[in-house]
Amino acid sequence: MQKRTKQILSWCLFDFANSSYSAVIAAVIFPVFYVSKIVGNEAGRGDLWWGRAISVSMAVVALTSPLLGGIADFSGRRKRLLLIYTLLSVSGVACFSLLSPGMALTGFLLIVIANVGMEGGLVFYNSFLPEIAPSGMQGRVSAWGFAVGYAGSILSLLIALPLVRSGHFDLTWLMVAAFFLFFSVPAFLYLPPDRKAGLGILRSSAQGAAYSWQTVREIWKERETRRFLAAFLIYEDGVNTVIVFSSVFAATTLGFSSLELIALYLVVQVTALAGAFVMARPLDTAGPKKVLMLSLLLWTMVSVAAYFIENKTSYFILASVAGTGLGTVQAAGRAFFTRFIPPGRESEYFGLYALVGKSSAIAGPLLFGYLSSTFHSQRPAILSISIFFGLGLLMIRGVNGGGPNVGTDRSSPVTDIRQEKA
Image (cartoon, rainbow, N blue to C red; front, side, top):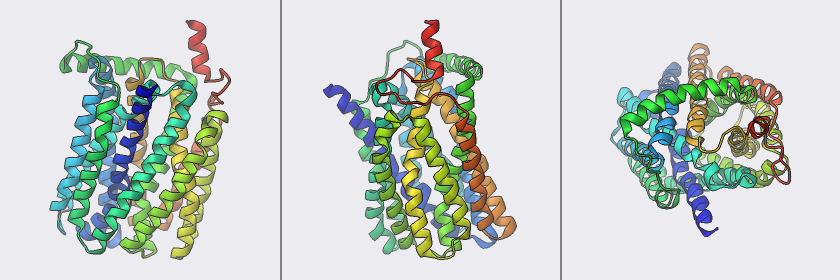
């Protein structure tokens, strides 16, 4: 029990570590810095560069995730790959300190490197969840990870606040790199060790490629898994676009300063933290499907309301409401997907999960940048996000499974079918 507790705590702490990247680099300070100071956002030019950088990096992750998931399973080097990707992201962030105005292409390349490291590592990080948490607690542990992550976001933003206030953006990026690296150490100490499968990288790559294609074919035959992933592809596009463009919208359209953006995001993180803890138990007792549908309904209304926002106070209020569903929609989706995974194939299935999730981050940012530059306004772009949430909600509603997993065997139709075959 003590060993399992250490594994769960270290797993959650890794979310605490990488949330410094999510908050400072992906969501709040660096997007505005890159768009306005490095590129310049005249006629939406900065939006286009930022959208392209996110889309390209997500495309790289999407294309490589199934292959790497297979490699992790066959070679047994899951933790080692997580370490490599973490160091890649940390190195990219540290190099942000070398950027100066006009270095749009260099910044673009560094963003791709840092984001590939961050998002690619999540394939291996997520795959530990079914192994370290019993089935009756996976929803709660998933939510705890996001909740602890929001605490990491809050702390990293509080540390960044005096640095931004004094104009030391280079030190801000170095702080994030150090924060990410330091707090990820327990994960590499206490998460389950790599397995000695006896296969080298080249052989496991070949086996992984073949097995990944087999996994795609198998998942395609599983009707409910296929329907869930299709819905996930749609609604996650909205989530990813909100994360990477919400601060840019606040700064460009509503005139938020860097300090006001930090204050805004702190409010969002506090409400997201509260929402994740409040909804942790319902993920198991009510089931991830109901929680996910409620969150998507909330986000649909929020994205429509954002179109009409005219002042900072209203945006603060709207962001507070939105925050309550931010962690919930991600935790519920992850917990829902674990119901479809056969034992021993976690890395492989989460590789496909990442493929779909990161593919969904390709279209949304490109669409936002295109609409912003076409209409010379970000309001049509922010309104378009509601389509992703609304359509995702309708599709999730038609997916069977995702019921309570406490005191009942209603795990999922896929699991029931596999049990019958066994």
